[in-house]
Image (cartoon, rainbow, N blue to C red; front, side):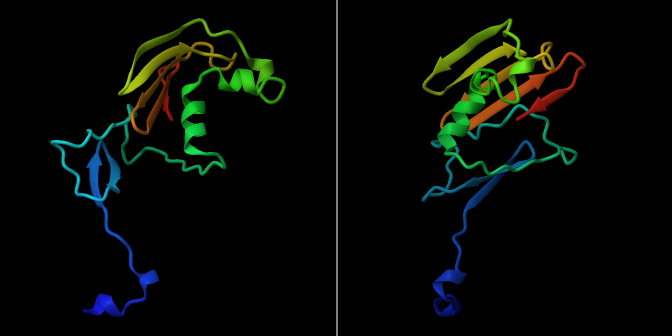
Length: 145
């Protein structure tokens, strides 16, 4: 067998992939994905097309910190006060937790700076690891993070 003669460093493991809503998901489990028993693939709310601009960021923090910061709309105005953010900070007019259970949570809020005061935001967490943040602006534009 030719694979037996390759150095171990030259081998890679194959993973099952699925396409949902224009995104590629990699199933990195030890067993094959089973749609009847495994959790459904959580699809973000964005409109993902070939025209979508993508940005990949590798932050120097743990994934737990990234999830917590992404879900916390008070993170920037509170923790960055006195730095780049405080001059534009305004109180949020609306903040509502729409749902919260073991499967995840969903919250909505208004803008928190003079630059996004007319914005409506929806932040969704679907266990175990999807964070979907969608900003809707008064001019009709949307941004999904």
